[in-house]
Each structure stands twice: as C-alpha cells, then as structure tokens.
Amino acid sequence: MKYCFVFIACLLLQQLNAQTYSPANSSRAVQEQYNKAMQYLNDGYVKEAIPVLHKVLEQDSAFLDAWLSLAGVYAELKNYALAIQYYEKVKNADSIYFLPYNLPYSINLAGKGRFQDAEKAIKQFLAISSLNERSQKSGLYRQQCYQFAIQYAREHPLHNVAAFAPKNLGDSVNSAQSEYYPTLTIDDSLLLFTRRGEGASENFYQSIIHHQHFSKAELVKGDINLQPYKGAITVSADGDWLIFAGNFKNGFGNFDLYISYRTPQGWSEPGNLGHNVNSEYWDSSPALSPDNHILYFSSNRPGGYGGRDLYQCIRQPNGQWGAATNMGPVINSAGDDAYPYIHADNQTFYYTSDGLPGYGGTDLFIMRKDSTGHWGKPENAGYPINTIENEGSISINSLGTTGYFASDRSDSRGGLDLYSFVIPPHIQPLKTLFVKGAVLDAVTQKGIPCAIELIDNHTGKPAMLIKVDELGKFFVPLPVGRNYTFMVNRKGYLPYSELFYMQQHFADSTYQKNILLQPIAKNAGFTFKNIQFNINSAELLPQDAIELNRVIEFLNDNPTVTIEVQGYTDNTGNETDNIILSTQRAKAVANYLAIHGIDYKRLSYKGLGSANPIADNTTEAGRIKNRRTVLVITGM
Image (cartoon, rainbow, N blue to C red):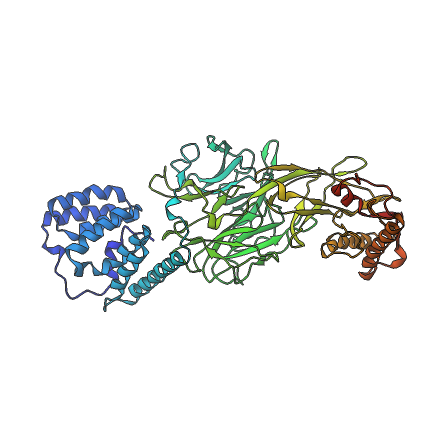
C-alpha cells in the first residue's frame, strides 16, 4: 500500500460536519506552494516534495494539510517515526479534523510495532458515523491485523523483537538496480540472485562467499542469461542445477519453470521442465528439496484454493518429474500463497501468504514435518520478521543461523536490495551436517548411479531419497542429533544397508562415506547391519523390519535367486547353546521372509554359533558385531 497519498483518505469519507480547521484560510501564496508540492507527489517525485512542504510550513505553520502530506511522504519512505510525529502534530492541533487520518496514523504506528496504539487509533477511525463502505472495510481489515499482532505477542512473549537488525549486503552485491530472489548453495559458498536490467529484463548474478564476505557480483557464466524475461530462481544442494521461472517463446504459459545445468563452460541453455510441471497459466517461485526429489512452486492454474497456490512435483526413478499436485487447503489459502523455500534439513518449510491471518499484506509462514513425515500447520513467523509491508522470498544458510531477503529499506542502493539477518530461534530450522561419498561397484570400483534411501532410526520412517549422479557421487545434508540407516537396492547387486551413527557428529561437519555394492553372485554375502538380537534372544525387534523389507524387495526383483540365512553369536556361553540360539535367529529371519510372501523353497537357514568372528570378542562392541545375521546367495 502506498502511504504518501493517504492524506487524501478523506476523499473516501463523507464530509465530517464539525471541523474547526479549513485549508481555505491559508493565503493564496501558501496554497500555490502547496499545490507545487502536490504536483511533485502526483508525478512520483516523493523526496523532491519534502523541501517544498517545509517551505509551506515556514510560511504557515498552521497549514495542517501540509503536515499531513509530509506525514504521508515519510510513511512512503518507511520512516514511520517521522510520519507518526507529523500526524500527531495535526492530531494535537485539531483532533476533529484529524479523525479520518486515524487510519494512516494507525498504519504507521503498526509500522513501528506499536500495535496496541494502532488499535486505539483505528477504533477512533471506525467510530466515525459517516464512513463510506470502502473506508469501513479498510478500517476493519486493519483492526483485524492489529488484533492478530497483539494476540501473537501475548502468546509468544519470548520472541526477541530488538534482536532483528537486517544488514545490507553492501556494494559488492547490491546496485542502483533492484536485487531479489536470493538463493544459496548448500555449502554456503555461493549466493545467486536476480538483478533487474533495462526495462523488464532480468539477469542472474552470483557472489562468492568467503568468511562472511561477498565478492563483487558477476553475471553467471554460460547461456542461462540469453533470454531476458526471467525471475525467481533456486539452486540444487550440490550446486549443479538452477531451476527458475522464465517467460520464453517456447513456454506453455506466461511464466514457466526451466532448468539449467552447470557445465565447464558455465550454465547450459535452459530447458523447459515440461507439461507435468508447467501449465498455460503462471508457474513461478520454485524451491527444490535438498535431495532433489521434490520441486515446490506456486501457480495460479485453475482448481486451487485461492489466487496462487503451492504445488509440488515428485521426481520419478527415470529422472522425470511427476504430475504437479496441489499441496492442499491446510497450506493454501483463499489468497495468494507463493515463494516456497525448504531448508537443507528437509524438515522446515517457509512460504508467503496474504490469505492467512497476519500483520497486513503478505506475511512469511513456517511449517515443519511431523513424526509421520507430513507437513504440520503453517505458523506466522511473527513481528518483526513480518510487518505491515509485503514480505517476500527468503533463503537460509545451512546452519540455520542467517537468513537472506530482499527489501527496499532506507539504506537501499536503489529499489530492492539484498539483506542478511540473524534467524531468531523460534523460526530456526534444524541444524545440519553433510554426508558425501560415492556408490561404487565393490569389484570394479566404478561409480553406480542409483538412489539411496535414508531411514530415520528413531521413527523407522523414510527421511530422504538421495539421487546419486552418473558417477555414483552424492552429497546430502542431514539434521544433526539423529541416526540413520542408509539403504540401496540396485538391480544386479545385493541389497545394501548400514547404520550411520550421525548423532555424535557436529553441525556443519562433513562425514565421508563410500558405499560398496556387491554384484549378485553365488556365495556372495550380505550382512544385516541393523538386526542386532538381544542377548540370549531370537526375537526380531520392530526396527529389524527396515532391512528385512528391503530383502523382500530384492528377492521379488530377482525371482530366481535362492538364499541361505546364516545366524551367528558371540563366543560367550556354551557353544552347543550358541549353535541352537544362532539357528533360532536364522530361522526367525527366514520365517519373516516367508510370512511376507517369499516362497519357502527359495529359503534355507543355518546356525553357526560363534564361528568366523568378524570382531574382537573381548569387547562388548566386538561381541555386538559378532552377533550377526548374514544372507548368502546359494543359487541364481
């Protein structure tokens, strides 16, 4: 909303009967000077009007319309403190004449976070008996926003308002043009963003980040900037993909989503993501999950819940994107929902909405995955992250401590600038660490393109699907404080699973791990990593199903393979008892497979007691490893 012209708000009102002040009482010279200021404002020269208005007030300090206009100008410049000061000067001089201006006055009070004072002012505005319908509607909307802000502050008393201090990224990043849509690579080494060019053209720029310093922004290299009309951008976790919105001749609608790949020569010529993603309508503001598995975006295509809704596409095993699906009425509102962003933790999601309760305009909302892997209810990020202005896209570093956004604050170099700010605790994502490595053929050591499924050992639910590149390499962020099972089922290879004890690793650390897949061959073996029987027990535990179900998938995919389940114990106790116990354990695994559909003719089992130890039996850690279950291929 433009505030510099709110001094004409009275035009939306029917005339108040009782007025003690009239601008007609001023001299003709003052009126002419004031009209000159009004002409500047009508032509869009807001700052140029300020000295003219001050000159008016030097000649006639009782000319209240000049004070009101000056207040409107400073409101437009987001100098809420001065705007409030000038509004109150008029209010103190003539409270009756000021009554209709309680609406813009309340907006500026809210701009400074004074929501209780704003609510008092809006009540005085709504008490005017002669308000027309448009003015009443505007007042009631603002009252609802102020009441929301007051209630939010009451329910969230620990949020530190004073700590919010956005910092301009400076001349290395920002320019006299507008900069917006910031996005970061997962290692926080590169900032990419959009910069407005001549006319409506837009270009992508990048700045290298080193020890929190930003290099001079440069055009990204390659063919990605050949087309002029493009905007919202997101970068994949590994920095190899750029997905962005563009308005190109080969598009389906007025804006489509495109992808460009990093090459030694720079970014490739963009390719349209196709009809499963794009429509003949507006499709924009993409966000890519850190595992490259889900693409989120906003669209105004028919069938949604409001103007613009959030949609998602899931990447299929063949690398193509599945059909776009609406994210549903809990997330989408009757208004516009846009600018999704999912953090590196793959658990925390941000987006903007003007259809959910908030502070006015477009607010930033946050939602998190619950224990079942579903998105929870969106929550307003609160003041002062959200204000009476329209909030836009956000990007957050991998540690979850620093956010980046675009704003036209008073220290802007021109238009929108990029700013950083400290993420307050209540909207921080989970802290992450990184796992990098390669999936290799255990015999040839060649990379194997495949998918790695991560299971959260606490919930037993899939947490992430990692797409490995054509060289077998992968790089993935994971929330700290959890343990995971890494699982791979690849045709032609034995199933792989291994427990990764990530709980002991610190945030922002990197864990190197190569995964070796064993080709299917007679006598080839696979050791279950998660099936660890309790002492003297042959009972399978609930978490054992994670690996056993993958073995079932493997056997279903390879229907001619037969296996033997071998059970082992540590060397404690009587060996005869160990043979019996290990046989019972192997039988328990074979029975599980049979109960879940595997023909018993393909299964055999054997207990080998403490034979063939793979670790030192003198330590508890070693004994745990020796109490193992092994799957051996007996026929193909």
